[in-house]
Image 1 (cartoon, one colour):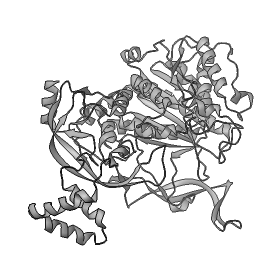
Image 2 (image 1 turned 180 degrees about the horizontal axis):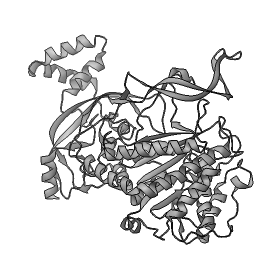
Image 3 (image 1 turned 180 degrees about the vertical axis):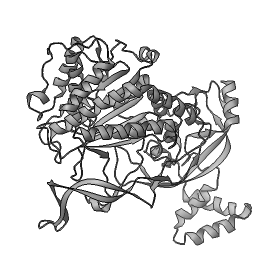
Length: 586
């Protein structure tokens, strides 16, 4: 196609010493099969090792290992042979991470990335101002589960990997909680490099339409910020170029009524448990690419390849602007005094021209339900409402630091993996601390990613004097990862350690009373504690069906015998004065 020649020419003009070399690189399965097959895990490793030997501008590394001890491969592509984060940062180049096979049933990014690097070697044309990190297989065990029946809704390849890891984790739900060994390897790698832009390659499910690729790109930055301006400029140019190349591109398609274009579209900001949401809360560009599952595998791979090439070309020209915008956003982020976790759509939508296809709703003779029949040979453009303006439902005021005891080692591990700064108390220290008392917890009725997440919870906030043990960990917020820290620790955050079920143990009672002890104690309390009788009668009026044990339970909760840590969130918060004092002492 003509666009390929244009992209290659752009690379050659921007790079130095571009002389085509003989094609000594073996073909990959995608090429040998004319776009019907993808590479297995073993073939991908073989490609990575051989390609690094063919070019001095490529280095092969292993960032860690999967649950079944398979290596997670990485190719670093750098025209100047700078293969460490330190060298690249000193040079001022833009860092682009291309990530594939996080869901190995959706392998398109792997094939596109291999074709991209092959082309660079064949033409000896490498970007001058961009260092490329290519992670072809984030989920090796999923790719090793190779078969023809792993994606029922997808149009090729002939065989592909499985969506989850060997431990059944969906890696694209693990970015904050980091329970899989794959994620525990990825996080240190990512934060060592801290790419300016990350492209995570997927294949979508859903309805039929004309677009070959859909995308999500959120920054969480102010709409007038330089980072948002860079994002908007990039999207405008890339979508225009992709359209001209024959690969129409549109925001990720979520219909208000499943599968029905006429119902309209909506979008939500991604949460940081997802790759693009995680990158966004770190003030970087996180592009989620979703090739359309009903398009042929060959066309999908070619579309992702085109997007990768165009993006690299754009970063060659505008990487400095992106780098400056990130620095500005980092500085602004550290000054935030509140954060929103939940959003709702504006009731007033925009109207967009959506390139769909003819379809009809048919009543199933088998189930009696409704299903949609698409006619892709009959393209049609619909004028439909698009609800994409998201409004924060509320803001949470942020403290200056979070603090928790040394007994919660799992949090410390995650701070290390996420490369978040913290310090530990050198001595037992008494601090005025904001605490959250948790009430009326309700859990989801089935596990999500191996944990029972909270469905609903109420909490009361109080400031009290707390004695924190030596080794307790203090996490100041005034660092570039402020938003990520707040998402981890604020109890109302839907991705917090609390909401994701890491602290379910605190809701369990471990000490109980006998009625023969509490009956005389309750009588004595009624005789000696002022106003207690009135409070008890009020409680009984609200709980008229309470049995004997429940009534005595009410008295038990009024005594110092009741566990003061029951339903107490183990993470506290510090305001500026206490943080300053504790930093001075430590």
